[in-house]
Length: 404
Image (cartoon, rainbow, N blue to C red; front, side, top):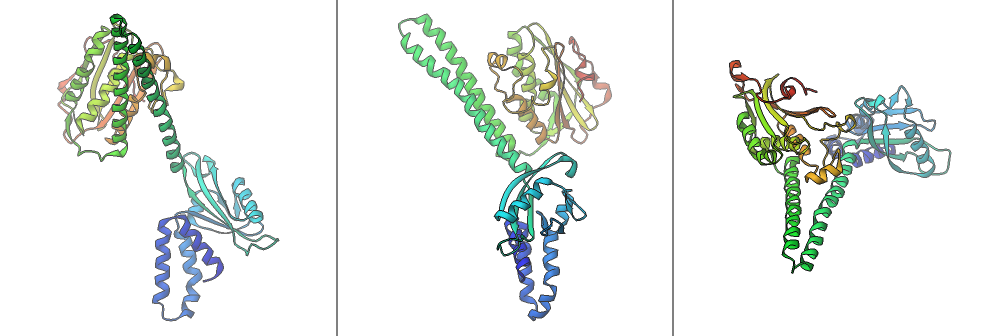
């Protein structure tokens, strides 16, 4: 095998497991051939075929940065035009490789090249000459898409940092309250006051832990249970029942309506949790003595469950981020309501796991409508005569608005 082919194969092995399988097959082909001479004549064609089949993109540049070889994966990235490399950062990396030897670097490709937004690629550049003194020779660049890998790493880092921050607050408060209780042992009234506050912090900590566990399960920590037919009416009734106490404390009315008898395929407990979180948000961020509406309807093969409030609304700049973990529009208000910043993230993952989605319509000072869309089960649409309108609820947009 020629030095150039050997180096390409070595790069391929380092770039991915699938290439290792191809290399094994190439070696097997060598063993079954009857004599070396015929294999030598086919070796370049096999090597080129190997490079073309690689998932990583491979580009070979000569001493003048003219492309000698680019496999289909490289051309699919849009970084090659005829015999030119279009990304200045890659050309700069090739120059550094010629002068300083092997290099590894992440390079961001513009969205206009690859389509679907910018991509991040991990690039391994090596010299193909003997490494002797100039003049410099050809360079090989192997590129692997690492966009999702790096994004996942960033999410994990942020998650750990956020969890640490969120846990420190109630734990620190409990530590201070414990000290205060010890100092106030002879004052029953003070003890009761501090004990009440400790109870609230304990409840907040427990809610945070529960939601972290729920989110971990929804994100793949446990396999999704078998999807079964679920009555939407049952899900809504359970969510309303869970939220009734908090709503009554603020003298709020939860009105239900829409179409009865809808059936989806899903996990009833998860769907009830998702709708409960939407209702809990509506209660937390709406003024006292207002109304909340929750309604269901069938549309385009989905059951749509809309929760509408007449609350403070969500600023436009925040709407694209409210489903992120720990993101809060108003940190100070979230602290007063005891929110963890995980409720809407859980709703998003429940929807995703069921093949659905969740969207939001909102206007500051008017209110918000969150719409959970879950695929209907076969035969899950009732007779049209069963549809009813929401009664005693001001926000009629629960059915007609809020579709994004």
